[in-house]
Length: 75
Image (tube, rainbow, N blue to C red):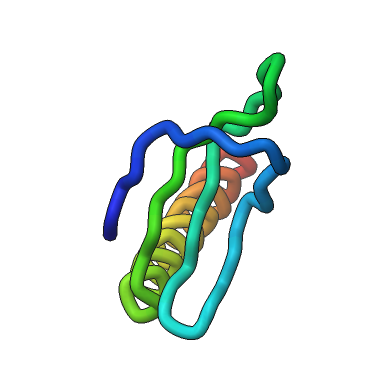
């Protein structure tokens, strides 16, 4: 991962751009008087896939926990 910090552009950036080797994630996108500013982070494709898989596993575990707690409350 390479965090380029806050960058500026005259063109509104896409939130996510995928090229041959990388996934570029742009967040905190705000319009300024002379264009746009945003935080730009570049991930290798394998690194990004791993991060998304970990996030999905955590979300799934959270959903399973909520489902289990809901069952307990209903009984």
